[in-house]
Image 1 (cartoon, rainbow, N blue to C red):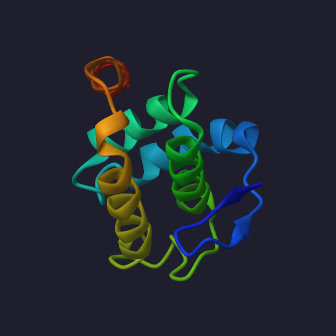
Image 2 (tube, rainbow, N blue to C red):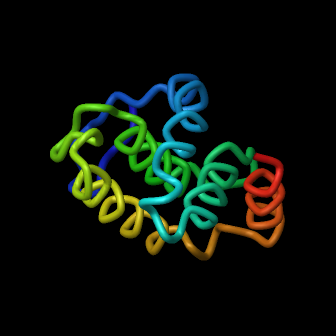
Length: 114
């Protein structure tokens, strides 16, 4: 259970985010121009050294990202990932100070290997 941006409790299971992240990331890659930052956020959220508040923000945003049915369903061509991009942009902006060079390097390596 984590808090969203408005402070409401959100049930986000880290294992569910882990399981669905790569599948969703591959689908969204051509729609999300800052996918490298999203993947760096993923690695930051899983890092044991990341502060709990930053992890909670990232996991809530990544949880929203992996949901198929959100405010604008992902399958709607051209619009499906716009709400996800807004949520991810806000989360990444909020925790940018906790995203390290190691997170960005891991993201770059993960994106190149696909």
